[in-house]
Length: 528
Image (cartoon, rainbow, N blue to C red; front, side, top):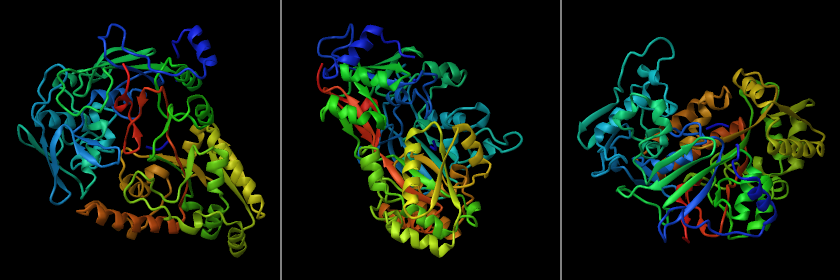
C-alpha cells in the first residue's frame, strides 16, 4: 500500500467549536431498545463503494465481512470463517471451512463459496478492485495476462476437495497465507453477487458481525448487528454503528470533542496536541503498534551521482529524535528498522549508526566522498508533514556545509517522475502494510513497482524466498533480518519515522486494533 461533504447542521458545528470540554456517549440508537448500544464513527470521505480494500468504505466492509482468518491485537492470526488453514510445505494450503456460517440472507457458506469467489475476483476480466491480492496464487498469470486474452477461466491453484475443504497452491512457498486470507480481498461473495458486482458493491450481502441497513453515500451508512451471525464478535461491540461522512477532518474532530460523534480514526498530527488538551487521556488513544512508516528512498540509477558515503552521511544528519519529539509532538517515533514494531522481526537497532544523528561523522563521510554538489530532496507539495521534514533536514545539512534543497512537487507529477525513473535525488515516501508480516516490508523492497528503485540483490532475494518457506516464525524472522541487513547496507532505502495512530473518541469508547490497524467495528462500547 504505497501512498472528505459534511451534512451536520450549522448549529451543531458551532456548538462543537465552543463545547471543547464536553465529552460522552451518544447513547442508544433512535428507535433502539433500552440497553442497546451505538456509536457514530467518522467516515473520511464519500462512500463510493464498500467492498475491497483501500477505499473510504473499507472500514464498513470490515464490519460486514467475516474473513477466513482474523488478526489479534498483538498481530497473531486466529481462525474466523475457517476451522483451520494448514500446510506441510508452505506451497499447498488446505482450508477447512467452519460449519454453520451463513450470509446475512441465510445462504449457507461452504468451500464452494470460497472457490467461486476467488475465481471470480481473481479473473482480470471481471475488473474487481481486489484482484491484485490474488497475485501469489498459482494460475493468476493465466487469468491476468499482461497482453492478450486470458488463457484460463479458473485458478489452476485452487481445488475443491469436498463441501467443507479446498486447497490453495501458491506460485512459491509462502508462509504468509494465513495473514493473506485475513484481507478484505478474500471476503466470500454469494452467487447472486456475480451477476452484477457493481450493484452488489452498493448493498453487499455480508457474512460478518453486522448487516448494512442504510446507505446514503454522501451522508452515512447505518449498520446493525446480525442476530443470526455465528462467528467471532468483538468484546463490547455496539448494537448499531453509524458511519457519518465527513470531508473536513477539523469538523469531524470538533464533533468528537463536542460528543456529536464517537470515534475519529487516525487523528492528523496537527490536531494531536489539541486533542490532548481537549480530550485528555480518556479520549485520545495511541495505538501501540505502528503500520505506517516513512522513508527516504534512493533509486539505484542515481548511485553514480550520490555514492554510498553521501547517502550514509545524509541519513546521519537527520535528527530523527528531534523531528518526532519537537516537530511532530510525538505523532511519530523514530524508525530504527525497515519494519515497524507491529512485525515480529522488528529490531530496535537494525539501522544502527546510520540512523543515529551524528553530524561530525556525516561531515567526515562527505569529505571522504569528495562530493560538492546539491542534494534535491523530493516530496509531495500537498504533504505538509513531508515539507516540514525536508526543511528540518535542509537546515541540519547546512551545519556541516552540505546543501540539501527541499523540492516540493505536485503529487501526480511526483508519481509520474518516480514511475518514469526520472528522479534527480532522494524522495520521501510512505509505506503501509496490509497485514503485520515482514514480507510486507522487506520483500516489498525487491518489487520494483513499489518504490521504483531498480534495486536487485540476488543474495537478499534468496533470503526472502527462504524466509517465506520457513516452517517456524523464529526461523523466518532470522532470515528476514538478514535480508533487512543487506538492504540497509546498500543504503537504497533509509528509515525515517513510524507514524503513531491516534484515535479521538468519547469516553465511553475503547478503540481496538488488529496488529496495529485500528478497526472501528472492534470499538468496545461501555455505556448504553
